[in-house]
Amino acid sequence: MSGLPPHRVLFRSDSVVIRDYQCCRRDRGLTAETLAPFSSVAIPRRGVFIKHVHGRSVVADTNHAIFFNRGETYRLSHPYGCGDRVTEFGMMPQVVSDIHRSLGHRASRRFSQTHCPIEAAPYLVARHLYRLAVHDGPTDPVAIEEIALRLVGRIMAATMGPRDERVRQRAATSRAHDELADAVMMLLAGRYAEPLTLDLIASEVHSSPYHLCRVFKRRVGRSVHRYLTQLRLRAALERVAQGERRLTRLATEVGFSSHSHLSHAFRREFGTTPSAVRAPLTAATLRQMSKILTGQPAALA
Image (cartoon, rainbow, N blue to C red; front, top):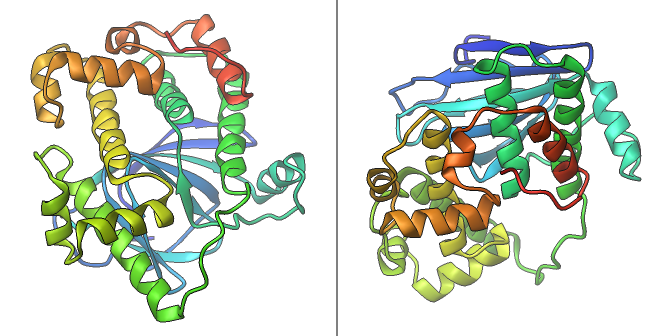
């Protein structure tokens, strides 16, 4: 288990384990081979790492949820040597099977995907769950467990929808497109705070702007600009949730042009304001979290 970074258990029940990982690795090499002790969904809050499993490399940044199956072996690496912070929602395989069944799919104790994009609403719910477990003292454990299970169900449902039909390609072309998309994601995750341009990004990954945009949108499902904006907003959310109040300074440090630009984008993405995120979490917040995860309109204000 030496490949695992230091962690602490924030919440534990018969169905759910919530853990906080803090990795401070400064080298970019592979960790030792690690065995996943249970099935889990990992949601990065800061930094970027790469999961190496079954011959595949999966980019893990704040725009993604990463799946781990119980008993699988994997290695990690950190392309920027700057570590990461991750909230992990672990569960027994039977829970995974139950969620599959509830979504109308064949019962399986394993996740079928290695990773998937995570939308703004479930991302914010995951951040609030972390805060409840760490900072806000005892909370009804049933409420935390229920919201955590709904969160995982919501994320899993996103992997089971109809896939975009891809133009048939030769294996080599498809692989090259995957590698290009991964290279762009890694660059954005490590340099989101910089004043990037499309020409600069394309030059860094040895592509043309047009080809890069077309391949990235097809492979990732979002434009380069949208992906970059989400990285910046999630970096801002993490710092605001930790108590940052100097929003003008924060805006420039995560890549926005001004305080107003950040505030407008933040509210549009998360349906709430930075000041509301800093406010104490209440029973009403828990009810809103549940509504969001069941598809009902509700803002986390």
